[in-house]
Image 1 (tube, rainbow, N blue to C red):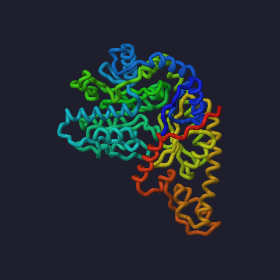
Image 2: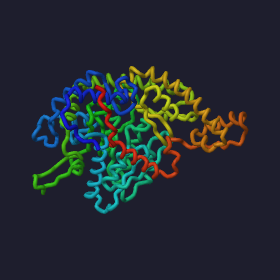
Image 3: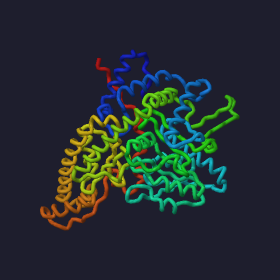
Image 4: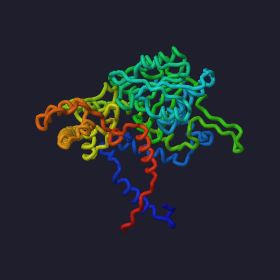
Length: 484
């Protein structure tokens, strides 16, 4: 077991070791990472670091002790609410990220229902299949049953299915603007209307789009209504450390009015240490994240965000056109902004993703259907051309790999194995070609492969494997010996 070093080390030695540990990290500075990091240039990064450092030690747990943090949070909330169609009644709080904001939305709905729907003993919330897993996490934490509804052919939430899923136990309905997997905006107005009809709450998950869609609309791109301007929307979550380019972790949970937000709070008045009250999940809240959020909103302003998002959308348009021009690839759905999913009817896109990884690109894999996920940000303006060139090469390599695997599977009589690595249309096409070489009689069936996990018949086995991986993340590797 690793223990504390027996002696002090120099600051230089510690920092050198940390720099060495970064060598294998994703190369986000070069625009080769399409998730996790939102980079808008060195000037933004420098400002964030300076603002964060100014309030490095301050603690948002008690804003009365730090009125500066109280000012920053209140003004960030007001600016965000104004951007998203709020009014003088709209209120909110800063959180550590989208997951915490979503947790607060669900906790609010549960406690609101305890007051306004006291007969509901087993509360339920309706989630489209594309809703972020944080809602299921919140359901697990707060004892709310998630009811998952299907999508329409355009990958948006099915309004009819949502209406049919309403029961006397329903307390909350959810839509996304946009959905993370495919970048499409759910039919927010129609879903909110259902919520109003049934006198339940409606939450819009705009974690990824809240600081993008309003500017995209101003730039002239079509954006459906999604915010507090839509009757029936009662809460919105929006991450500042995504397209607002704030420091991590900073997100906002907004409520239509103060009466709703009171159900979010926790108060314990009988503790020997004094009255304890907190608006969100966290107790201690890093002052640096609050200060940096305020700094970036004031530094960029509407002018800066419009300029950045103009670059992002131009880059997205280029990437989207380039992907659609590569035979065998397509963009799933009709994304409203800069979130894209690459799919294929004739290729194993996971093979394409593996080939892109070999070329140094960090791209997330998705399932149901198989796809590759792209979050296009400001930094990708410099790497878009290189990305498209490598993507074309990766597709060509994936075609060859897929056919070779298919032929080998046929040669050893492993048709079943071949069907597991090929999508249906490709299986059908290659069956005809391979039949001329090896004979006919190959069944034209396939199953999507998502690594080894997709071959497991029981999804519970997948959960166990993932739990094993999580356990291993905190396992300490053997410390390398000093070389000097």
